[in-house]
Structures are given as C-alpha cells and as structure tokens.
Length: 106
Image (cartoon, rainbow, N blue to C red):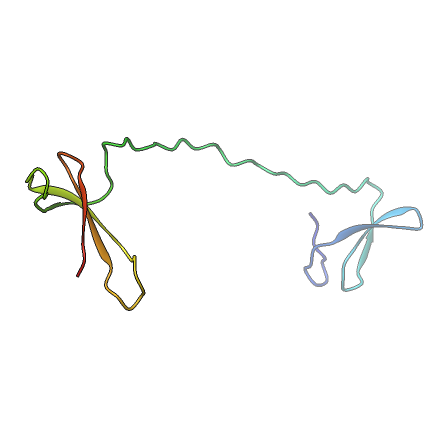
C-alpha cells in the first residue's frame, strides 16, 4: 500500500495510456514500471470451543427458598418481565432437589 507524498491519502492503481499508474484523489500521479497488484489478506478467526452446560448445572443464583412440593430449603431463581413494563416482574424458582418450578408475583 502506498500513500501520496503530497496529501497522505492512499494511492490507487489505474491504467492510463497502457501504463500502470498510481494516482491520488488530489491529482498526484506516480508512474510505475512494476506490475501493480492489489492484494487483500483475510485471516479467518480461529474456531472456538464452547462448553455446553449440563441440564443439572444451573447458571441462576441459588437462594434460600422453601419448595412447596418437597420442602427443600434451596432454589435457583430468575426474574422475567411477563406483563406490561409498568407492572412488577415475575420471580421464578426451581427447587435444587426435586426440580419443581413455581413463581411469585409481587
């Protein structure tokens, strides 16, 4: 890649009267006896391995909450906006032991 010595812009190859010429948008031209080639190199991003979480492994935080089904004292919880934006969100719970899911409205 060559830059214009006059304005600093990138010089683009053109053919004028059968000759290869590097020209700039400011009007500067440089004749070149060598063959002008535009070469673009694309490096592909390395493939990444993504770990898939098991069904048993949960990303939700574990809190103290009593399961209505088995009375276990720990549950995972998450919040979802299930109604209009001016209404409070719904809290969902999933028992750590029996996997029972329930919700709490406030």
